[in-house]
Image 1 (cartoon, rainbow, N blue to C red):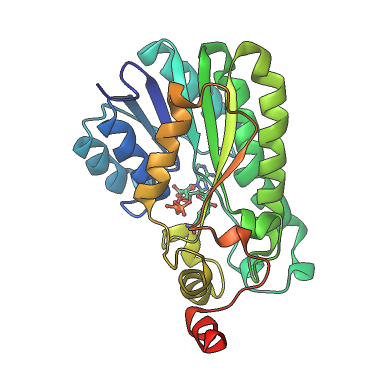
Image 2: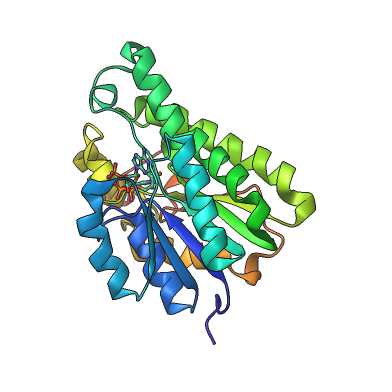
Length: 268
Ligand code: NAP
């Protein structure tokens, strides 16, 4: 029997087969969850519907998280279709390309607001909208990049600041919803080649550096994130809340980084 058998799980932020949300969707399917998928706009419908069919998901709904009426509508539709919800995954972020290539101090007011609205506030707004239909024991989760939130990842800029706010929001939501036995956690994945990642200046170098420098000398996959999401969604993590859990081949534990070659040379 799958770990998520009988659980109703909604996933926000599926864009294509490279999306972290797709790794999570497939892992949830494997573990027997009843799936619902949400995507950002009409443009994506063409790409998302065939993916939903692959996992036999019948509930596929549009939700632009910048619009309060979209959020209210999707919560209403979910209530009608599923009754109650056990798992909600927020895998959404946005920052303008300019903001991710110029120095951070040149961030525009509009760019700052957009990044915060779409990447942070939307998690708060979704939690609030779905609260009336969350089962006790429900699990909410979001995706962060801790290396850019608590430290500096060059070019990550306003997105790093947004992720810091998202991680903090995770803790405040966990505090608010704890008495109702609803858990809220963040997954911090190492760099993965996705659509969103392509917008970050110097991403290719960061991706390569990561594989060279992490203790396990390996990049992270959407399947890895999917498996962690299963753990957080399942009853195995019953009393885990407010955490930022790293899946990064150990990258974040390093204080001083040396590539494999440099290390070998210093050992000789
Ligand atoms: P992705 O496939 O591009 O997913 C990002 C999703 O956010 C897309 O589905 C996108 O839809 C959606 N989105 C943007 N604006 C939206 C809006 N107004 N309303 C609703 N949805 C909106 O990239 P990803 O890398 O899988 O990103 C998923 C999450 O993982 C993000 O929070 C990201 O920061 C995080 N993360 C990524 C990495 C990485 O290296 N890739 C590492 C750590 C954490 P559109 O395509 O229509 O904009």
